[in-house]
Length: 147
Image (cartoon, rainbow, N blue to C red; front, side, top):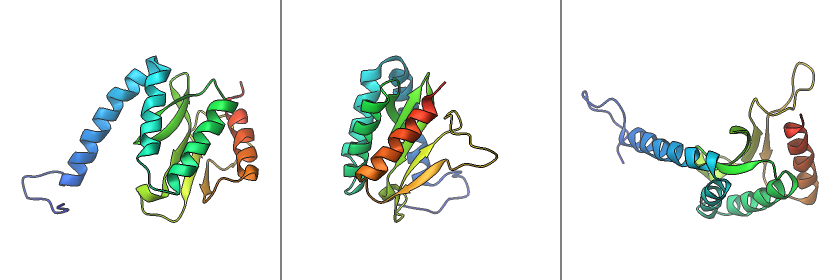
């Protein structure tokens, strides 16, 4: 794979592939916003494609979120599992292997109701998913979707 750009080429091969993948995903997102099963299928496919331990964490996280916050619709967002309310991403999982970093991330978008004063966390490093982390995630997700 070439990282270099020719004088006439504006984007690298990798950048072009990423744009094509994002375009394809945006079309899938449109279907997912109208059909929960489509979004669930896409999220589960993204999880299945992950390396371990990301796959194990993401699968359990998916189960925890869909069980405890059924109002959230699963889908993919930038190739990773995400969970939406009224078409807006509330929370997401980002595999460590996607960016070759030492921990996965569980994060929230701006539509999540997590406000706590003038500063609050919006993402969390996640190396494993124990019952303690599950309980904290359940509480955060329920707070995030509270009206």
